[in-house]
Figure 1 (tube, helix red, strand yellow):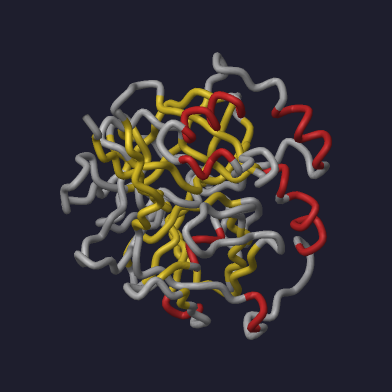
Figure 2 (cartoon, one colour):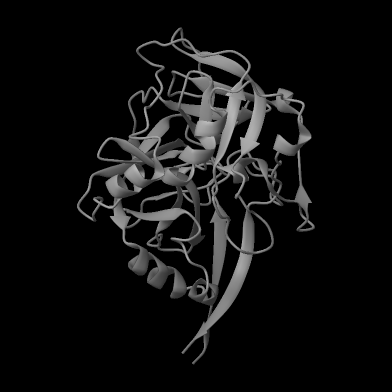
Length: 310
């Protein structure tokens, strides 16, 4: 008997105007998080859109697909208006104000030069940078996270020591129940375990045959899986960190959506970011430069393939 299974590629967007008009941002499961000083909420029209990590007091690391996407006609749309975005740090509750909360306007978006996002395939080198108009102020609730190294080889050697027993986690804002339109107002944290490349590719291939030719390693990516089977990160958690043994390892990118939530989450590796970032970190960025502007997202889910099994 043939059974039709539909695998959907879910890019982990935040405030998304999709065909249902829902705000699709959530960590499903997980636990309420304390203040994590380097994690920020990147907001669009005052609504949470993506997560991000403060590398400096004015540079935010996130996913480049947070500003790229497809409209309802499956055509790429772009935005160059930085005024509709802002970055919020220092507070875990998105619905209240706090004396510890800091808000900054966006000066520029910059995407990794090898970032690719289009068609029906998953993104590659899904890394980007926001430069704020003014610097955040260091406080107990707002601090940058230092990268282990700015040298790609050194980072790769460090990441090679990560195993399935390594303590890893991610965090983000959002709904606690899949399919609900009630969004969690609080930052949530999710415990993860590293998934080796061969195992990750095999699991992806079990749902989507195009992963026979998609090389996660060559696409600058690393995989992790929730420790608890029914926990998952979801839309709105894009750009958030993968932290292993206290080191920033990756940036939330995508996963294959299925009902039991047991598929790996794919993160863009920070080691693929450092060489490019090292060349721009201390450079003044012109927010009017059109080549650096990326895109606005209108549709979150894209059908990849229907798999017929016996």
